[in-house]
Length: 98
Image (cartoon, rainbow, N blue to C red; front, side, top):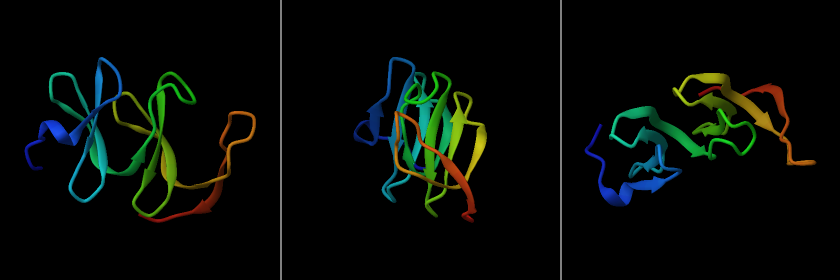
């Protein structure tokens, strides 16, 4: 992976940094510069938007899922998503391949 430049980094919080590549994919690194989540997603929401330990992710094939703070996909990013209702998203079973 190329060296991360300052303008490739968007702060999520004091511990995490959202990184963006030239190909418009996103990942996460810690405050020490260690890559926690490889930049393979087309979208990453902030941790805590839905659960304090999870972040909603969208892969480049438009599949949604959730990752934890270690970068592990808790719900693989293979699902479609419904609009927000009462502050919640619902993922449904139509499988989207990467």
